[in-house]
Every structure is written in structure tokens, then in C-alpha cells.
Length: 298
Ligand code: ADP
Ligand code: MG
Image (cartoon, rainbow, N blue to C red):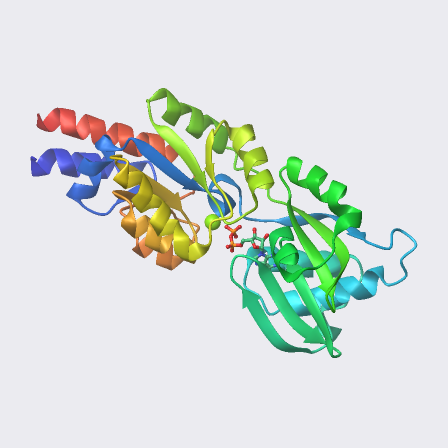
């Protein structure tokens, strides 16, 4: 490889907001066959907001606000983006952030949700799958949950002392660049795969919006790298695009790791290429640059 063409390639990348770590990263990018894309914060804006909230007891429930207050009290201890959304929503409904009740025994249950004790009562907030595994009955709002998830929303149950009391719907809008970038990558002959910890239905709804056909959903953070390995064992050159701490091992495992500049430092450090603005069209540009650079070298 001629150093000059590599420098031109990385220079053009930088002009377009694409930081390429080294010559090998630029070279490897032209061989990519499969692109695995994280959902939250990569395809979506990563700014979830609560759009729906219902209690099992229905609209006559006088405890609606108190339940929300307990949920916010527990979520305040979590760093998950969904937690922030719940706390903000509670505040918008009149729950005073400064006088939330104290929480004991807070615990973040990886890939599932959070729990803690409020006034001695066990409050658990998280996925339907988690509620099922805890043996918590959730019949009454299941059709709502399915409808919300079909509308690409993430849902979280609020359970108190082992009983489902409320259901929250959370929406995280797609980035403007997602659909066009996915389409362009597919046109280049690449397979685009979605990887997410979120539930299957929500993942499918988002995938359909952006035109992705293959999905790995409900993947725990510690299994993301293993999914990349599996695709590589199918003989594929794999790129991974992600923003979170959870994505770092997968970014490192991939043949080319691509991070989002607005994402976590850990993800950026584990990657070969960083898209400064988070515009996914940058993936297309990076591969085109790689191809042009290789063509110049040959
Ligand atoms: P991701 O954020 O990519 O969806 P995670 O493994 O962090 O993946 O979480 C998986 C799922 O667990 C989330 O989609 C959400 O449904 C649930 N979850 C995790 N943390 C929380 C939380 N603090 N509050 C509510 N639900 C949560
Ligand atoms: Mg993410």
C-alpha cells in the first residue's frame, strides 16, 4: 500500500466527519460483506421518550401518579437511557424530582430492567420476558403491549410486590439518515443485520421501517461479541456499528468496528472508524473511500 493514497483516503474521511484509525482499518473496510448495526443510539436517535402509560386498574386508578413516582424513584438510580425517559415523564406528570421516595436494595438486572424497595415494597420495572420469568401475571394489558411494540415502541412493566400494576410505552425516533444509509449499503451488495437487547417485536418494527431483514433481538450485552463471531464463522467479513459501552466487545471482535461520535468513549476506543456526527451515511462513504483507496494502490 502506498502511504500517499492511504493519507489521501484518511484525509478525505476526516473532511467528511469520518475518523479512520489506521491504514489497515481503511484497507479492511472494502472487504466487508455484512454490517451489523446496533439499534438504540445507532439506528435510532437514542433519546427515548415515554409516549404511553396505563395502569392495570384503568383510568379510574387514583394511584396512577403514586405508581409513577415509585417507578421514577427506582429508575433515578439507573444509567439506562430508558430510565432517564421514565424520570422525565414522571416529572412532566407532576412528580417532583426532588422529593422522590428513598430506594433500598437497588439492582440493575442486565438485559431485563431494574428493581428496588420503596417504603418496603418491591418495585420491578422491565421487560415482558423478565416478568414472565418471575411468574408475574400480566394478562390485562398484553394487547396494549403488543400494539405499542408493533408501533416500534419499547415497553416496560411496573410491578409492585410481584403484581403487574402499570405499563409504559417508550419511543425512540429513527435518525434521519438510517433508512437511506441501509438502502445504500444493501445496493452495494452488503447484508445489513440489526443487533439489539430490545424485544423481538419492537426490533422487527424498527427493522421493517429501515428495510433490514435479518435481526438478532433480545441479545444480552455479554452476547453481542459472540453474535459477531458466529457471523464470522459463516465465512463473512463483518463490520459492527454501535455507540454503547455494551457494544465495545462486539466492535473489537468485528473485522471493522465503527463507532458513533456522539456515543460512549469506550465504544469509540474499541473501534477502527468513528462517525463524528453519527450520520449513518458515513458508513457508505467510508466503504467507498476504502474501495477508491485500494483501487489507487493496485
Ligand atoms: P438495549 O438498551 O440495547 O435495548 P439492554 O440490554 O440495555 O439493551 O436492555 C434490554 C432491555 O431491558 C431494554 O430494551 C429494556 O426493555 C429493558 N431495560 C433495561 N434497563 C431498563 C430500565 N432501566 N428500565 C426499564 N427497562 C429496562
Ligand atoms: Mg446503542
